[in-house]
Image (cartoon, rainbow, N blue to C red; front, side):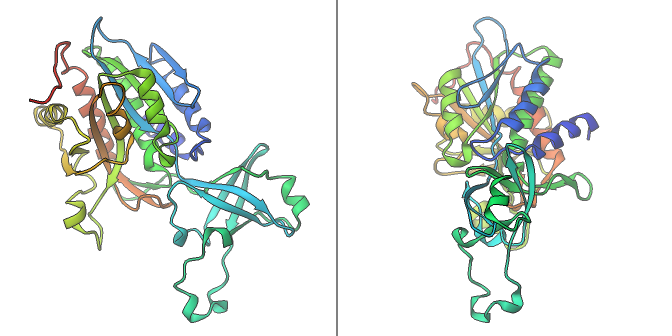
Length: 355
C-alpha cells in the first residue's frame, strides 16, 4: 500500500459529499489530477471530467466513478433547537438512531448526535419497531431554536461522523466507500496511463455526481463526453459474511480481485476483452451475473445517443450504505491494473458490435 496513494484515498473518502453537495470531494479530485490530465473541467452538474489525450482518431473511452455519498438534509428546527432531517439516497432508518453526525454549515462543520430514547423507556413491544425518519432528530447541543438557527440552515447536508480506519492486513472500513473509491480508482488509472505513456484510447476520467438519487451525473457527463466505450467503476455486494445468500448474490469475496459484471447492461465484446486482459496480465478477477439494469452509471452510459459499449467493474464491499463499509485495498489495486492495461489494448479499428 503506497502511503501517498492512501493519503489521497483517505482525503477523498473523508471529504463530505452527499448527493447535490459533492464539491468538497470534487476539489480533492481536481487537485489530484491537475498535473496529470491534459485538461480538467467541471460541468454545470458538478461532474469533474479529466481528459488524457490519446492518438489521433483513437476511440473515446470514458471511465466513471461517482463521488456522491448517502447522507441527510436538515428540514426543520424545533423550538428546543433539535434538527429534524430527511435522508439523501438509500439510508436504512434502523441504523441511524444513536449515531454521531456532522452538519455541514456555511460556517463550517457542526458536531451532532441522532437522539434515541434509552431502552429502559421503550415498551418491549416497541423495541423492534423502526423509528421513521420524520420522528428522528439531531441534537447539536443547542437549547433553543434561535441558538440553533444561528448555526444551522434549512437544507444543510449531514453525514455520518466517521472516517477511514485500517482493520487487519489490507482491509479498511469507513463511510462513503460507495463510491468515492470508484472515483479514486478512475483518478489512479489516469495517473498510471500517463506514467506508462502507451495507451491507444482517448481517455476521459469522470467523477460523477448525484448517482445515489438517480444516476444524474452519469447521464449528463456521458452525453457531454460522447464516448465510444464507457466503463463504470463501482462497489458491488460482497457475499463473504454470515447470512449472505449465495443463490442470490453469487460468490463474491474481498481480496479476490475486482468484479467484472456480465448481463444485458454489458457489451459482450467488451466483457470478453476485460476478461482476456485480466487473464493475460495475471490479475485475479471475479465474475458477477446481473440479469437486468445494473443500477449504476453503466445503465445510463449504455443508452447515450446511438448506444455505447458499456462495462461495469466493481469492488467487493461489505455492509453497503452503512457507516462501517469494509473493502480490501488489494481489490482496488487490481482494478487500477486491469483498467490501465485495457487502455493499451483497444485498437483504433476495434469493433464492439456483438456478432
